[in-house]
Image 1: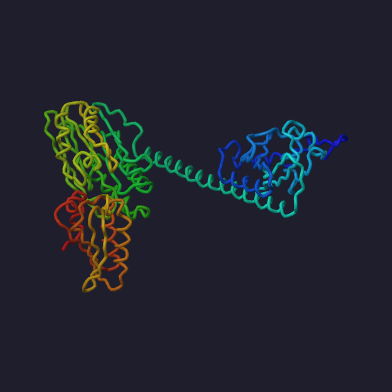
Image 2: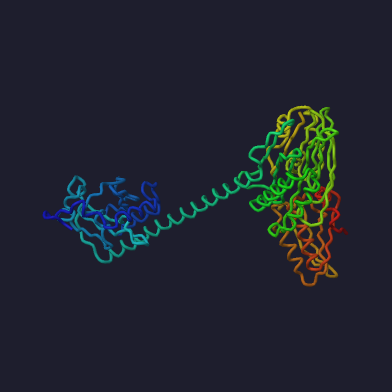
Length: 420
Length: 108
């Protein structure tokens, strides 16, 4: 341990496992943390037991020794000089120095050689469960003295208490960190599910102007509201729906419903047949056994009579036509919610649309936030829309946004499409 | 949602093998699990040969509550039990009609 002069050199105070040991120090994330009463109590007890003025919980960093707790000395950290804590962590045994001034292991240490005048040092390494010495619990005096076996045993017991506290803090941090991580992941999953429900950008549809909204009641809890605009060869399909419940199951079920209906509507301009096909798919799906969606589907298609709107409703609030002159028409015939029984049948209701007319499709969240909880009739909504007749889709949507209360219990989605 | 819960659900086994689940207040997502559990125990009651859901004191029901009703109906049917609803005019009737399931259910 010593060179020819009997003085310990710096190279000799670096443990063989230093890289791993420093990794352990980092892992416990204790360096430069604020004072902590639990450690301060231990150093106070140690100082009293030994009847010495100073007791320290030290952590040996790569180039310094940092004090987690320092009783009787107003110093936060010292250099990693040989002889005291830096040497004490080299072995698993207590490091005992009865008179540092004459001990070749310590006499060159600045605390010993300098003004501080350290004479007595007894330190026990703080050993992790996997065998790394993070630092020490040590007691210090400016007078030389001897230690008994009982005193050393007491110090070792106290060091074990310190280590327990350190391990406890790590596991608590891990638990908290794990929870935070799980929460982050849940939010990320929720966000990505929501993205799968709401088309990132509604396609530009020639001859129409479109505005859509998705108002989530809670950021981290996806609801099952969904909408879509289908640009098909035959014309334009419109979808709005809601799967019961909240959370990832509801959202993923809603996602399947939306994509299924989107796909069906690419080929079919008959929204009633589209709902029947969706119903068949969903009611036969095992995963969605206890689930259903409510949906309104519509098609916009130009034929010899003009622009025809065709609507089918499966247990969902009926779409509204906002005529250019301010008249509001509720359109559709209520069919059963979709995906529960295989034999459900839906029917279409048609209306012709003219330039300036708009169609508003929405989920019950919109209705309730405007008309009140449990409200299924759309009169309050009609009162908001009528004065907006003839305005752009975005203006209609903005009027609905404004009419919604701030405190929302449910998600709300809506889609406004206006004939140019 | 202040002093008392917004919903209450009781199970009573009344005469002639009819299990009756009575719900009061608001049956939404918050009540869903409790509602489902009570319905399940009602269905498991060995002596029962019919399940009645008494929703006359329900002031609000959303799609979560509706789902419970539909699940109860299906489970009751699978177990060979009768299934009937007791409802008052109002929120529940409106919901059942808006969801297009009014004709699926029996009432008493």
